[in-house]
Image (tube, one colour):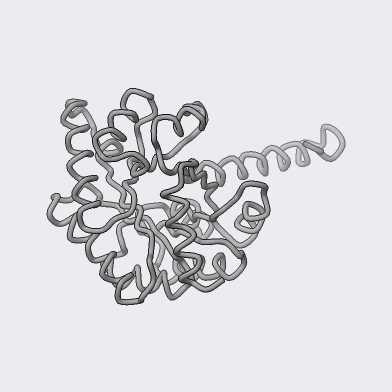
Length: 253
């Protein structure tokens, strides 16, 4: 499949009635494992996990060249659409999206970091322009940190801000609005109603609502961010602990 074919396929997955479930990868090995699982239709990277795998904290601390190189290796290793977590664009959203497309990504997250709304919308518009310049129907999953950075703000103000940002991002060409943070059915349902059915993307973690319920609420896409990476490291630490303690046979589970 060509890059455009993959981009078209990823866009269809966002518009299909079926919930798009993404298990985030951080390197070639994890991407290949996920890509071979039954039901996997696309691969998403997790910036937190990619950065950690290279020895950097999250929050655009990893050199952009390393992040893009990781995306390129993953995209080359799987025969599925790849959507990349591009944080806030590493200081140049348009250039970063163009580089990500050049690396084989056909979709990506861009964070607003709760900058003023006009600046945030302009950043999303820059991502859309970059994709148009590359001639690839790049799927933009525009992220608002309204809930992650809510602090002690009034919940209704946070909701209104998330909705205003989401609508603004859709207006400039984003395909989906990523709202990490909310986990209850009432809030998620209200966000979907206000932003649009099959237009909201959320992050899931242990204890989240069942996928069937999220589908019924009208969510378009779910991803697990760094949680798969953290779970893998937890299992690794458990094996190491048992081996180093020499308390029994080699662990098999």
